[in-house]
Amino acid sequence: MPATPMHVPEPSRTDPALIRNFCIIAHIDHGKSTLADRMLQLTGVVEQRQMRAQYLDRMDIERERGITIKSQAVRLPWAPITGEGQGSTHILNMIDTPGHVDFTYEVSRSLAACEGTVLLVDAAQGIEAQTLANLYLAMENDLTIVPVLNKIDLPAAQPEKFSEELANLIGCDPSDVLKVSAKTGLGVEALLDRVVQDVPAPVGVKDAPARAMIFDSVYDSYRGVVTYVRVIDGQLNKRERIRMMSTGATHELLEIGTNSPEMLPADGLGVGEVGYLITGVKDVRQSKVGDTITTLHKGATEALGGYKDPKPMVFSGLYPLDGSDYPELRDALDKLQLNDAALVYEPETSAALGFGFRVGFLGLLHLDVIRERLEREFGLDLIATAPNVVYRVVMEDGSEHVVTNPSEFPEGKIDEVFEPVVRATILAPSEFIGSIMELCQNRRGVLLGMDYLSEDRVEIRYTLPLAEIVFDFFDQLKSKTRGYASLDYEPTGEQGAQLVKVDILLHGDKVDAFSAITHKDAAYAYGVRLVAKLRELIPRQAFEVPIQAAIGSRVIARETIRAIRKDVLAKCYGGDISRKRKLLEKQKEGKKRMKMVGSVEVPQEAFIAVLSSDDSAGGKTKK
Ligand SMILES: Nc1nc2c(ncn2[C@@H]2O[C@H](COP(=O)(O)OP(=O)(O)OP(=O)(O)O)[C@@H](O)[C@H]2O)c(=O)[nH]1
Image 1 (tube, rainbow, N blue to C red):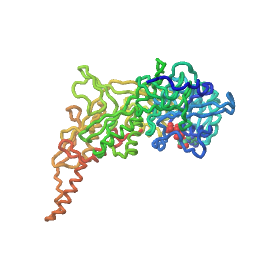
Image 2: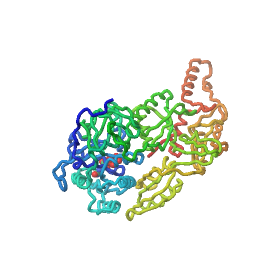
Image 3: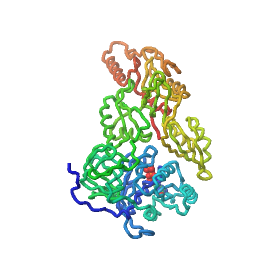
Image 4: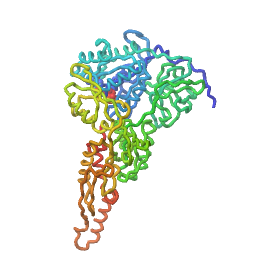
């Protein structure tokens, strides 16, 4: 295959001195997408009448939930009205980043594609946990920080107080903090000027072998994978062959261009430029975020740093409510995976729930989004088992098991069990310190430290087992702090813990969907609660059915369902045969929705009721 470009490319498309690459980082709901909308409008790339709220958030779920999941890049021409570069048109590449903890890796890649960042803080809320988490990421990437307070139009805004807080945090003067309203547009032009003035122009070696970093890749059903890149050195040209440095895979560059915000094809991209490329690949895993792209011919030998495979942190079993939907569920997961390199799954069978999949997610929001998309976009009705983290079990004979499904927790002589831990940062008004500490303590947290951000706001840091966070931690935190606390966490490794598997047995048979791994101190409560609940939900059978919770062979809780013979014909005296038949038919219908667990018939509703309850045994997930 000839590898030389088919035409002589232009040396560089835009003078790097006129380029500014920046992103906006903020806590959820502080107004990042609204600010992005205003910038699109002010720079004229989207006409007034085409403007719709949150232009860049394209997924329906993003729109409805008001969150940004996938980052996008957009090229904004801007001639500063004041200050440096006044009057000359610059190219501002704005990268919109996801704000939620589950997507931190995507945020960090977007940051690596920029020289500067707008740190956006709600003037009525002040600094929140993700403001800090994102700020630390930006500092690690050596980005220039432009501090901005948003929503100054709100009556509850406290610009003085929070500019001081923000200035203390990043070490600038409070008067350097810009004050804007993304909603009305007030101050946004001045902000664009500041970006030109403060954010350094990209530096890269024009004549070096091409190196471009992938900071996002999305699947488009018409065009295949669209990969978003930032060129660091050299240039990429249309129709050239390129190589993915992590896998060695090569592709032809069918199309390359910029986003304004719609795709605008070009001949190539030069130093410092941000844009998209299309190679015809059909799966985002072939174009991974963080990877380096170079040219096949005279390519670079050293990749840009920072590539890492997304690692699922939380697993859950997904089962179709109607067993015959299994092939549709598989197809739907296959389709979603095209656009989501972090989504992993494998088939799984459960005696209780039938055929389904064990699916790995980055976190709970990711789980929720995937589940909702499966239900909404693919019309599937699903049962999800309680989410669990990944455990590492070391046996006495030295062998190791990685457990992603509690029912596969090994039996026998266990030496130690390891669970993932996170470093959690909680920001809240100081009056809630007591209740926050109590909550963290109850969740096996270890206090790392505490700092006052201002007189009445504190930052509390804890090490917590991830398993204790994945259930209802965030809800509890919110309710204990009247909604004022914010939480961010990052994985920090694993710790040995006294964990046991609790099994639930119906008439002596394990119900795999209810097996759970819990701390030994919480096992008894889990067992008692589940056993009591199942007794309520399972109808009487022809024989007595014991329901037990057990750790290994030791029973820790027990209830009994008494025997009864349900005779549907009892009401039919006389010989009305057609009526009898009807009743028997009806009973048969009902039985179809029954699942057999060993010799016990359990209505599917019982499984759903237990799995969707809101206690820690429940599969209904919350952010
Ligand atoms: N009053 C007022 N409201 C604003 C302003 N900017 C944003 N909002 C509102 O704040 C809410 C959150 O704004 P978004 O732009 O969705 O926030 P975001 O940071 O992009 O949120 P995520 O994408 O979830 O991270 C929306 O209801 C906006 O209308 C502002 O300047 N003034």
